Image (cartoon, rainbow, N blue to C red):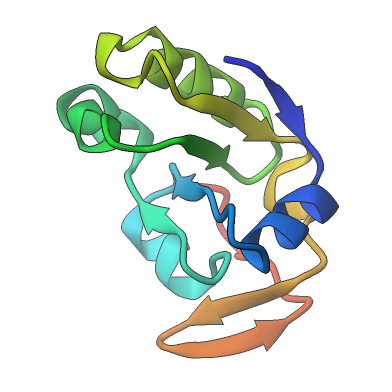
Length: 118
């Protein structure tokens, strides 16, 4: 893992040409209730079996409810040989700290966070 990244930095990156892959490690149900636009849902328990999907990424940001489990996810992803060149970061504070819009069922929801942490 390279570091933690602030939600404001993530939001700025999402609007830039250097867009990272945002990996939301919550359950599909929690993800469906609200997630960062353009993020991918890979539940934490599935991460070891799906880690090879990130081999082509240049930059990866992991996201969870409070910013704790995403640190572990970022460490796991960065330990994978196929992501050795990627910059891997955890979003500090998780979705609790995210002030940007959230997508749910294809629609953006401003300022809402999921009810269930996982």
